[in-house]
Length: 68
Image 1 (cartoon, rainbow, N blue to C red):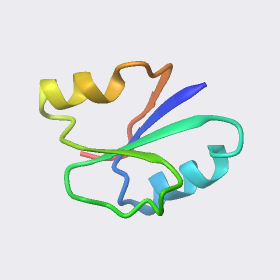
Image 2: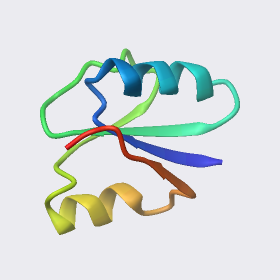
Image 3: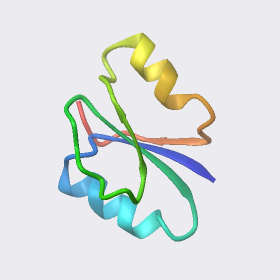
Image 4: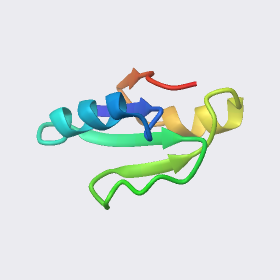
């Protein structure tokens, strides 16, 4: 399953990503640059910006919103 997790810099998002990583393809999104250690796809953008959000959700099956 392809999963987008917003608020990538939060502890909650990092914990969810660590738990789901083994069984799913993950994309993390944050409005500021975040080092995801090469483990996940990362998109810099804001959930408040329609263009950023449209790009981030493209191809995703699930959205887990933990940020802004």
